[in-house]
Image (cartoon, rainbow, N blue to C red; front, side, top):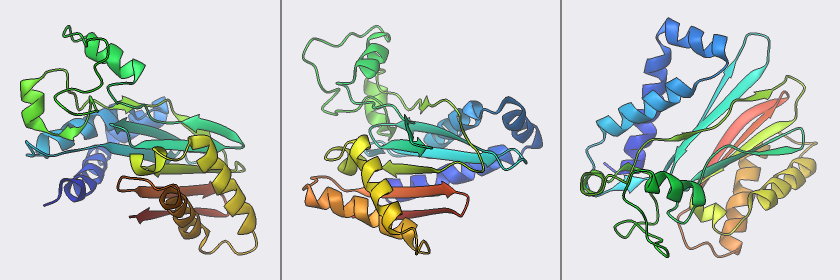
Length: 238
């Protein structure tokens, strides 16, 4: 089975299983933080994968409510797929880039004790230092990791205007997060009188923009609308 398809099936089940424990749920609600849940879900997903020569990036956005109609959102990721949110006009990057050229990732790699040389942009031919799968590489080089970056928790009030864009690097290679946010806002304004299919249209607008800009990679886009009148999501792939 394709690794990405397997991942999409396993990780949500892992999150659901962890949160089926009432104590774990209560801890998330009381702490207003799901870091431990996300960390455990990635670890258990990695343990269930038996892919030695295949790997994939992963980005997960967990959203929960506190019973008072306030939503909380927290993101975890490995690799270079990414999530950006916009809450009441404020842009929030929810993920971290794990390319070997990223300063934060280079610091993590160097802290393992096996230093990168100046000019090194790849590990064993790969541009990423973190992924799910690729277990052969992880056995050969301990600098590879499946440990996710976990964002801070963001609060979304009932009256907030908020949305999230999650996408693979096929989008972000050709489109900045600022431009993606602008395109979403423009499309939301156009669709204000007919919002029934706006999530689908906005996801498609972003995908078409990536195609227009001649992205060279497969592109997946997930758009989530948190507006109180329309809390919906839509995913498009190419």
